[in-house]
Length: 267
Image (cartoon, rainbow, N blue to C red; front, side):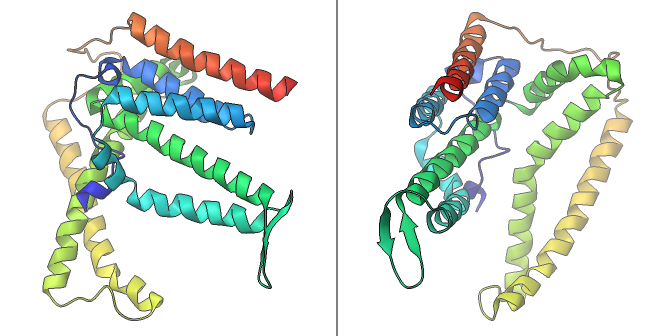
């Protein structure tokens, strides 16, 4: 079950994406997430797919591991595709039945939206798969630093976000242990109506929330016992270094953003 989630996990490596500055990775993913929705032109979608595929290849993430992690997300993507397929009208009729009518526009719209969701999940997962929690925190803090003038606690905010991502696999592992313990006590999660199945998961959710609060309290106690203090007074053992490859990566995604805007305005 742990292999069925990829967001929040880190895979050690020495790939091109692993060696990039976390600030560059965050800038690239933000540009990608914003401008992929600017234009619906097939050329823009094709270029975005090439960028996502190139990033995945350069990250050297095992493809089998990626497929296992995409099983749950694939269900959501397929459901989204079906919604657009059966509810979007436009273009010639591909299939007409007494129940529904499928149009070419619905098929095209469903494929584009499904492909966009797939690319977004892939790019977002690459951030955590190739970046350690410490580097991710430092990168988020550096990007949010200009907002300190507005009174935003950037260090604490970045720390909370990175801890939340880091504890996704941990909470899932706890859920698996509780699930197995309830099964050993005779709990049944696969039989009965949908409402009964949902109620059967309450004995899993309640202990999981209790364990989450306990972990949060233990973490806070450990940080206080070590004299942890955030903000400008805290020094860093590892400093972020911006290199040419980071500039090149951001330039590529910036070019994608410019191209997307041009396609939207002139095509």
